[in-house]
Structure formats: C-alpha cells, structure tokens
Image (cartoon, rainbow, N blue to C red; front, top):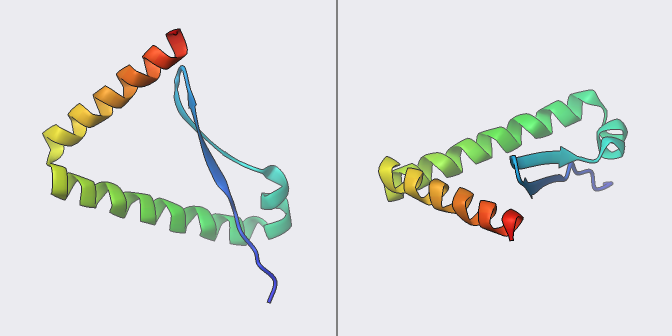
Length: 78
C-alpha cells in the first residue's frame, strides 16, 4: 500500500500562527481525501485543546496563550 499523507505546518508569524499545506500534496491526494484529512486533524486538535482545558483550567490556558503570544511578539521585535 502506498503511503499517503497531508502535512500541515504551523508557522509562527508576527500576526499569529499561520497553517499551511503543500498544494501539491492536496492535488495528489485529491479533494475528498484532503477534506477527510483536514476533518480528522481538526477533530484531533479540538480533543487536545479540550483535554488541556480540563487539565489546566480555562483561566490557566488563557494565561498560557497570552504568555505564548507575548514571547512570540518579543521574538519578532528582537
């Protein structure tokens, strides 16, 4: 069986986080498989965030995200 994958990259930019996929991969997989991959990735990410909220609590998660944004801003400024 051939290995098929859709690779997403999270790029940290001065405007936030930008998610990119290689258009060639999307073309090779076809629209149907690409959409299934995106749906599975979204479901996975939602479950990870949900578990983080359960573990850390909403306030702690908000603080963590704010800290990450501040660090990101420092890195782009400096």
